[in-house]
Image (cartoon, rainbow, N blue to C red; front, side):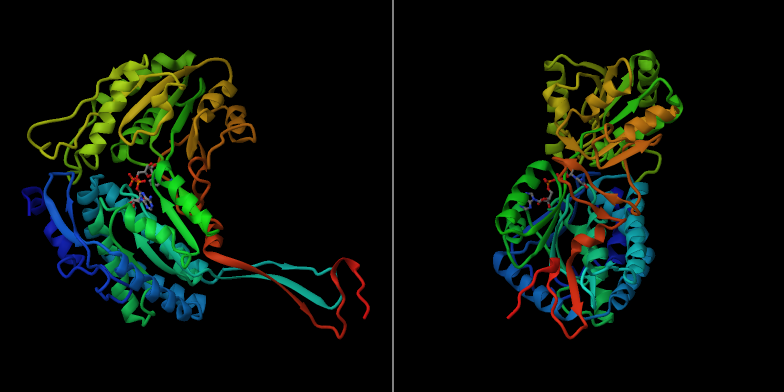
Length: 517
Ligand code: NAD
């Protein structure tokens, strides 16, 4: 255990999360499903080895899917509120273990401890939501056009749901899916990111304990571990009716094609290229807070991170100067230390992508306003700490069109009215999050109108980053079109059935058709 791990209580957190006796298996804790090579998990915080996890082989996967499929057949017969009760107890455990889990998220992924706790809080919130939902899986009733007939729709569980998640939200994304899928009556197989395998195992351990206490059938929560290869086995498996995949657009295109080829359903939550429009009527103080947190929070590794600032020419210099000034105050370092604002990138490949983005923006004619660079020396031994950078750039630069998963903010000017800013904002292939900073009602409403933002998330006077679980979360265009979390996102985890019942002694046909025999 490294010095930092000792000092910030990682050893105790691992113990609290039961990570000595690693369970990498299914809902009630059976550990016979991972017999493959070992993944070593290194912390980007200090480069130390945190732990090792065995990967899932093809043969192991076969046992997982068979167990989950059999478990589903029983689980689907449990009344939904009883399934909700299990989720409620799981949530009690999350509340109890919030600190150790938040700490492990921070240490394994590199986001600040506060953000790690925030991520666990999202798990807690979605579980609360799901418990209520377990008594509200409503369908509609309709009036039949035929006399003596009743018509309604109902929702049944879908089956086994495959969840693929990204490294940057190593625990929340799983719970956004599972909490809903469980109350809906589905079994879940989770392939977490190979970059954060220990947080996956920690979550699985919590589910395993609660599920065993409640006699939940084996396989309702299953974990498979490994890289894209094990993910591909699952996405190509027709026994998995829904694949919910979170990650890069590159991955989403592969997954979408594999699932479509077998006419399965996919829920895709892919990359973003999020912009804030700053109009002449913006509150500059709030704009700076929203933009800086959006661009450097989680070291620029949120799907909703602010990548572009589109500022009206009349206030361009003022906003630019205020943001550059704010960047000078950023403290970069160990994310477990609450004095720091910015932690490390996930690994050295991410550092290379960051450096290459800065080179490219200069090659394309951009102007660096805040220099980037990789930090070295004491506290930065992992080689993953970088300086958040700002460049003046044009929207049509290739590098600006691309999502670089790092703290690089592009700023640009617009002139005239807000429609010119919207053209720039919408002029990218991604469509996740967007924001406008304005106190002008007309501008705000135009931003939200049918001719406004084309993103799944459109905010007024808050930044692009972060979202509450109550709303449906997701984006349009190459972000994939999926929605998860709140609102009616639960419907994707169920199959809808329309029922028509005839309680007469006749058999009238629909549309008045006569068929006399
Ligand atoms: P990634 O695409 O490299 O990996 C994501 C997951 O997909 C991992 O578990 C990986 O093993 C798996 N995977 C990769 N190729 C696969 C394949 N061919 N078949 C099946 N599984 C495969 O992404 P990452 O680097 O972990 O995460 C960063 C990306 O995720 C960014 O683009 C970010 O915007 C996006 N993201 C989006 C959301 C959202 O809700 N829209 C949320 C978080 C992250």
